[in-house]
Amino acid sequence: MHELVMVLKMSAVTALYILLIVSVWLWTRNKTISKVKKVLIGIIFGLSSVLSTHYGISYEGMIINVRDLGPLSAGLFFSPISGIIAGLIGGIERYIAGTYFGVGEYTRIACSVSTCLAGFVAWGMNKRVFKGKKPSPVFAFFMGAVMEVFHMYVVFITHRGDLKMAFLVVKTCAVPMIFFSGLGLAIAAAILERLCGERRNPFVRKNPEFVPVSETFQRWLFAVTFVVLVSAFVFSFYLLTGSEYQDAINKIEYTTDNIKASLLDGDLNITPDNDVAYDYIILADGYINNGTHRGMTVGAEEAMELKNFAGTTVRYEYLGQKSMIRVLQMDEKHILVTSLTNDQIYWYRDAMAYETGLSSILLFTVIYVLIAFLVN
Image (cartoon, rainbow, N blue to C red; front, side):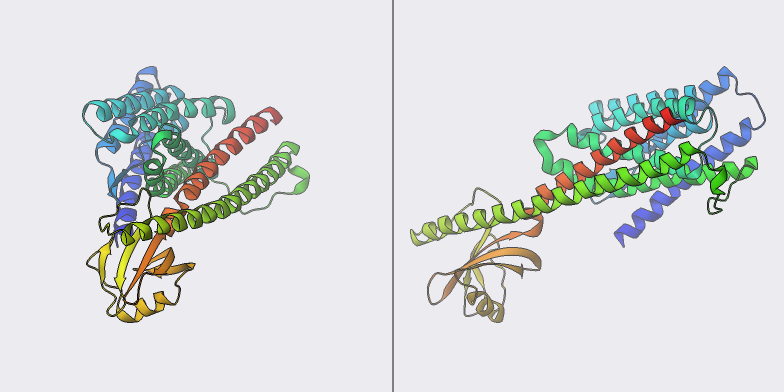
């Protein structure tokens, strides 16, 4: 339900951006955009970025938005100068709001850099790649999505000392921000194509005799680069999974031995120096009378099931969470259960997967755009 509310709110905000783009286009339609209008358009879309900062959507304790749509829209659909102005307004205000007013302070650097850069990226793409023409919906989606990929990647590289929190931010915000930024630009581009009478059917296959060599080369470049990057990602993910699994086994076995020794010495207030949780369970009724989850119960039946794992480390759904557990029978009445949830075991692997995926997309984009530009 919470996800549905977020999607509806993000859809509404994206629709407002699209309405703004179409309205400004109708205002400037069939007219030469003067320097004054270029500045005014930059200010309009810069203010839209500012509003996105202060009226973002709350989701999973984070604030998500489509702030970068402002400078991208101004620079790609109207004037490169307008994009730069909008990016500077939105980016500088974002930094001031985060530094002095506590608005999204944790990500203020990543957000402000991304928004400022969005204006310059739109300027470069408009001038060098699209040659002043409006991008197609496919390219527009690609531009919006990649800009947010860069945004998320900067969150990682500016918080190397707090990687777990950076991962939480990126995991929560990445998908909705990337998707809706790309979708907003793509829909706006499609509407402007229709209003200009330039709509092309992307599903109509061209005659191979009339397909430029550069276009064929770009398609093959896209396919080969994509396969190489995905293969590298899958291989590194597989290696990290094995490494994290083995580290978790070593950690839980080491911690279990230490906790057992402490309990036998009469120490009932143990605080493990890592993420491992421990529970001292009464076999008769499954009541946890000491440990991380003191006061909870697993039930007599499950307590006896856990007893069957005594002396082993296994994967088990413990207290409603998929976990790795190690069980020791302390005496005839008690068992000791230590546990690590899957999120605790694999958070670093998942963080590296996100970071590697984001950096691979950025690398692919740079290579593809540069080579396509040179080929053209």
